[in-house]
Amino acid sequence: MKNILFAASEGVPFIKTGGLADVVGSLPKSLDKEAYDVRVFLPKYSCMKDAAKEKMSFLTNFYMDYNWKNVYVGILQAEVDGIKYYFIDNEYYFSGPKPYGDDGLFEIERFAFFSKAVLAALPLIGFRPDLIHCHDWQTGLIPVYLKERFQGNDFFWNIKTVMTIHNLKFQGKWSIPEVKSITGLPDSFFTSDKLEAYKDANLLKGGIVYADAVTTVSETYAEEIKTDFYGEGLNGLLQARSNDLRGIVNGIDYTDFNPETNPLIYQNYTPKNFRKEKVKNKLALQEELGMNVDKDVMMIGIVSRLTDQKGVDLIAYVMDRLCQDNIQLVVLGTGEVQYENMFRHFDWKYHGKVSANIYYSEALSHKIYAGADAFLMPSLFEPCGLSQLMALRYGTLPVVRETGGLKDTVQPYDENAGTGTGFSFRNYNADEMLNTIRYAEHVYYDTRREWNLMVDRAMAADFSWKVSAAKYQEMYDWLIG
Ligand code: ADP
Ligand code: GLC
Image (tube, rainbow, N blue to C red; front, top):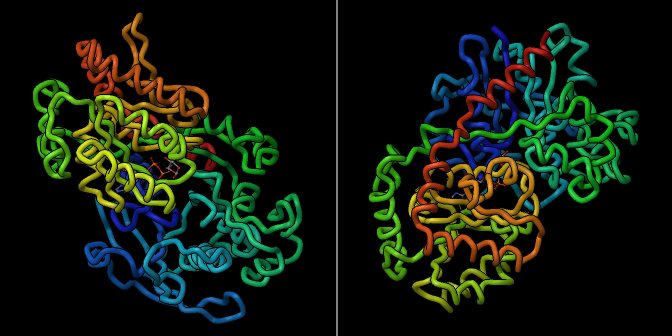
């Protein structure tokens, strides 16, 4: 039995702001239970829902030297679907209305605390991992602290680490003197071959430098991040580590995201009966959202963080033109105020046709994945993207830009070959996107048989964790030896 520890800042079913939580919630239970004992560390946020908190019980606590103080570390535990979870509890660091705050320096202090506390907690819970799988900048200091202080102790000797990059845009950077003071790491760590990047201390960089292997969440993104455009300043380092860097595409939880059984949608359907049953979801959704009720209109769905990453500016640019077409647009998302207001404006202007839902709702997200005909995701960059996988699973055809995981998971329609599971365009250009949406409209309205055959293929595509979990296992085995 090999012991694997996941450390991350979010995970379903406890706390979620985006796809990272889906991955942390679904990958551990997809690994072979006979061969791996996988456990997960998360922060215990006050903003977690009561249902999540009720699953937890107090395990133990200790005090840890951190940022010139002796700081309380509580450890809570829970078990879900056979996976053991542990939570690092500290009111000062993890209270607040959201998991992530706006104060950059305090963010660094909070997650550096989490990283150190995870390592310090291990001997107390009696679990010695053979490998720690770290996710994103919030856990970037785990490989660093492990090498710098913990590995001197027998318990920690020879623990391996993997750093997975879910989004290179976020790196956890701040001025060196302040990070040095907070983390207690010695001067020698803040050089350009270690944590320093462009004069700042960079936590993700630390993780990339010190981890035994680095992964990201699709093959295309693994290539893209070695270039200037996608590399966010770390492309040089990623090139240098390219022998230890690989892309493993995410899966989704095929039990949760199952149109046959999911209780959150209005009408369950299957690959066999979607031609008759799926449309009932569209009609009920139109009704619920106060849109024009029309079974024939092509409904386009968007479920997304409303940020630059997701290509929302392209959508804003063509909204008026798009709304001249015979379509409906349903949006669910939160993010930058300018984009939230943009969608509110078009909901007002094209009422009945556009529905802007500017909040977070698991239930509505499923209803959109099930009810829409097409799913729009024109991202500027997309490490993997899970929303398009959810859409495919529900037979809702993605319209995407060919980048990162979108390129790897959506096969563009080829009408001659009769292949494809969606529609895609190449350049980050609003007219190109609009043309592609219009091509999808044409296929939908004029060649419905072809559209439905594409839905068949989309629903038959397999983006469960089966293949990718095996790739992680292979990597763990290789590293652990
Ligand atoms: P990212 O992690 O970059 O936000 P992903 O596509 O990997 O993008 O994952 C997004 C996840 O968050 C999906 O599970 C999607 O359904 C969910 N999501 C995004 N916005 C909302 C929202 N407003 N309400 C409910 N779920 C949302
Ligand atoms: C990040 C990326 C997204 C990816 C998710 C899970 O949030 O933006 O593309 O799917 O992580 O890996």
